[in-house]
Amino acid sequence: MFRPSMLGRYIPEGSRLIKPLDLDAWVYLYERQNQATGKYQFLAIAYSGKATNNSFHIQFSSDERRREHVQQWIQGQRERAERKAKEMQERREFKHSLKVNDILHSSWGYDQTNNDFWQVVEVRGKSVMVRPIGKMTIEETGFMSAKVQPIPGEFTGEPELKRVCFGNYVKFDNQHAWLWCGKPVYESYYA
Image (tube, rainbow, N blue to C red; front, side):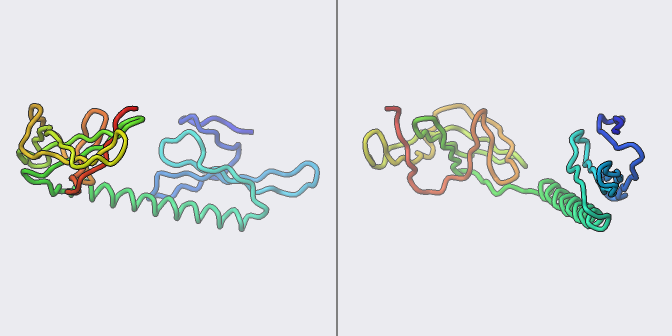
């Protein structure tokens, strides 16, 4: 028999709670007797964070196997929490490497490959001012395809202030732009 908890989770009637103090995780242990065989079944159900769905709900052949599984899961949760904390620290300490005149590149498209380029015209702390720039065809590579590269200084639009994201890229409406590799890139046209 299960009873709903305050978070909408289902907690077995008469279960014992294991709650590691350093984690946002809960494990409920309970036993149930098999009516046909009379043997006890050892069960555990676990939740983490604010999730209403359980992380696992498993029946074990022995209390020892259940304890091993629960300990492994808790250790995995600790490792996950450590990775998350480290990543958050790295994000907080992140300093981008973009500088004035760097070229950003984005490739996108469906049934064709489009390339957009922007030039960094100003650096403002964690943000950069960028302007879209033109591109030129370097060589035709086949039917309706070519290699293109940007034309620095040939601005095609107004400047935009963009925050540099963790990973050293800039987000635009439907695309992300990274530092251009410095080589011509493939582009194709709609057939």
